[in-house]
Length: 138
Image (cartoon, rainbow, N blue to C red; front, side):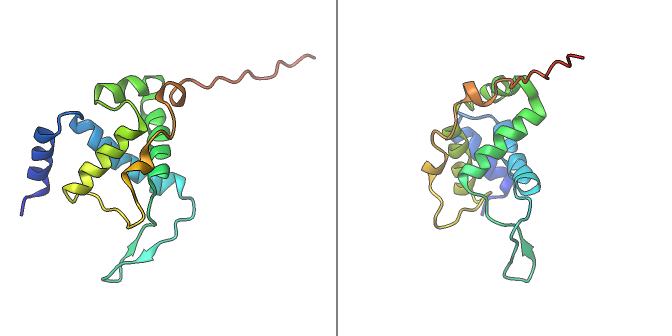
């Protein structure tokens, strides 16, 4: 059995579309989802009695990726992700399913690769959202 490190090295050599940073980002975004998106996580009890967090759907993970990227990289989010080979929510799905394939992530029976397709466009998702404050006319 391969070590997780060797499995990751082999994956990066086999599928060169994405940089290591993209895989790290997905893991961090998953943690972000558990901490920020799921305000009241419905934890379940694992086989040995430990509490495991509620499952995150592909759609929820994509939203976590968007929010986490904005929090970490601000207006440069789209450019940073592109440097890592990530240009769409479908790329998030490819990365997740690569990690599932090397047993570094898990999926439920209802999860599908297509759950990540076309959820939002990067052109709109990472654009600054400016709001003008009302001008006080006193």
